[in-house]
Length: 298
Image (cartoon, rainbow, N blue to C red; front, side, top):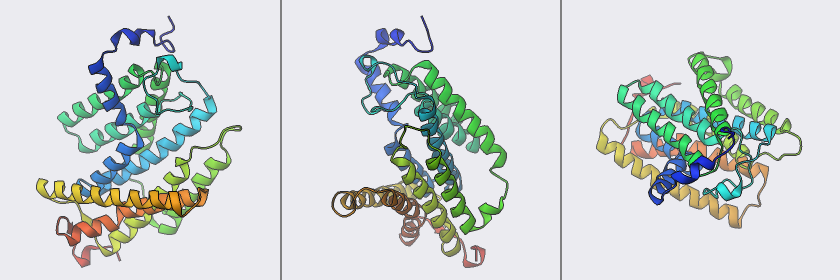
């Protein structure tokens, strides 16, 4: 039996309880969870760590989509699949496996506590195994995705503390995002169309950089110091984020036609919203603190 591509061994393992667990673990790799998790971590935990997580997510999502259309390797047959959210996308490399490594292993590296290493490793393994169990990917897909995620972390670790000129100047940072996004879109593998979330991610990154830049200058937001404030900040941020999503959906449906410019603008609004208006609101509600004026960037 070809273990890299054959999933026949999965079928005898399926039970109602394990299927429910697999769907729950698999949800941790979808955009709905990732976006909320990143935003909540930014507001209630540590904005520096979760800004780096955002950069890793954006780069990994772009790389994964690009490589999928390079290889154009089909997923397991429909008769094997329980996950109907993958649509007609290709399977190699697995985005869930890649993002699980990138998100959870990076958080474990940043926090460097034994119990967090164990917890993050179990979550990562669970997400990867869930994709095999649900028939969304074969073993080759998840191994390739995990390898890409690991290589991304090794490379990011080497450069994260360097102060490149484009990191220290807002205009150069935004130009770098635009340049990388344009290069990816223009060089996309022939015969394939980039996913619609790629321009949204480009806008999200630019909006986050822009919001963080001005938030540092005028606010100096720091996450709440106590657990009850963290929980309240997470609740307030969640409600604000849901309201924003509903507003954007109204614009999608009734005001603006779908276009590349609107996709970028929508991402820009979301990224800026996470980095500036919500921190400002949390400071005004006295759920978060701000640095003294003398310590802020000017």
